[in-house]
Image (cartoon, rainbow, N blue to C red; front, side):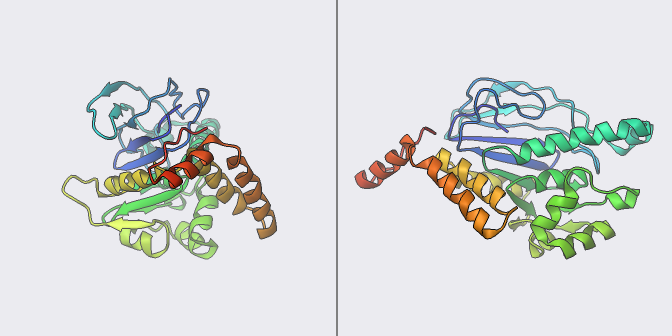
Length: 285
């Protein structure tokens, strides 16, 4: 994900064959800290990171970042390579009981930070997303998957429960009864099954490169990028907060969020661009 990214940037983070794509329609601000303490100046480029997939119930918490500009195409892609060792069950066995709680708390904090990113986020599931991997995807606004992908909250198989938000976000995504069934059974779904229950928005046949979902996520992100940055930020805020309250309160939240767009320069630019029959040039102001 992009830290302090300029409007019009794409960002992505990969854990094995599960990647997160962020359309940085809104500036994150110079003080926004990405999980893993990635900070820096405005990047104005597409960013992605590669790493090994975490084991079920674990997420990579130790990261090393480097950057190198590869191309100067439409997206001006910059790669942030991630070389790390994800948490796995062998590590869990070695942990003292007193260490498990703080460890899971760190995982939960990372996932919550991603959920609270003020830009649209898309999870692209091209492989395994078990336990913590699926919890990470659930923290994103949109999920897309290859038909061959495998995903599930399998913690009850290990005599524990999802600890990274799974018991709360899965029912909100697919409904309480079905979420209970999947968590109680530790069932693993493929992409088609996940689409059928509403866990993912799009499912695609996997390609030879093994990145069909990732490519779809990038296509969706490109659809988001031209929109007004402030509008995208407050639209996400209105939806997220409105879904947690009754309709009357939700409408009040929408009204307050709408009011934030009225004094912006971007709103005037949008009207002027419409009048002049040209594409708007939004700056997130």
